[in-house]
Image (tube, rainbow, N blue to C red; front, side):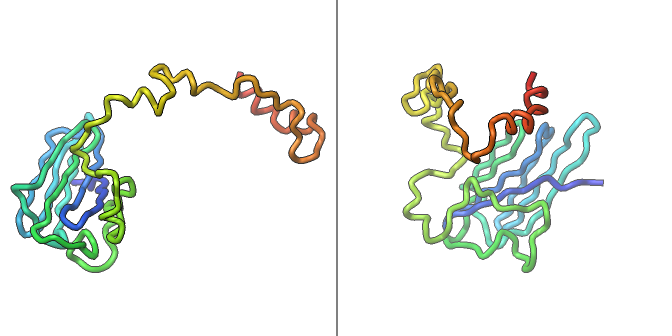
Length: 178
């Protein structure tokens, strides 16, 4: 029996982003049809569990302009809409979407915010990722990320209670840290 992978989606007026979340997928295959049909199939795990999904999308697609990238944990699809405009939902069928279809809040932009969005949400533009180690001027070794060096909290008593009460209350935590 086939199972369904998790499907995450977001959209712009001219694109739909679909991410199929399936770690360790093997033989992943995506099929797009101009009428808006999206089909995914793959196997996963040592027992080669079969996963598949067949979705009838809300609108038509420009299959030739769409992009698909398969990775170790996800298959990411950037689908070009045949007609520019915001879809009311991902699927053509009205009503609640299946439980495995969810909004991709990492890529989501509201319709009225599309023009002012400053960041590209395309998963295919990985430019500019080379300098991540610098983390905004903290230095490549991230030495500025240390603790609260030099700060003394011994005189701090926010609740007005005796500090020994706190030590008793958290004694189990201290033991667990050892």
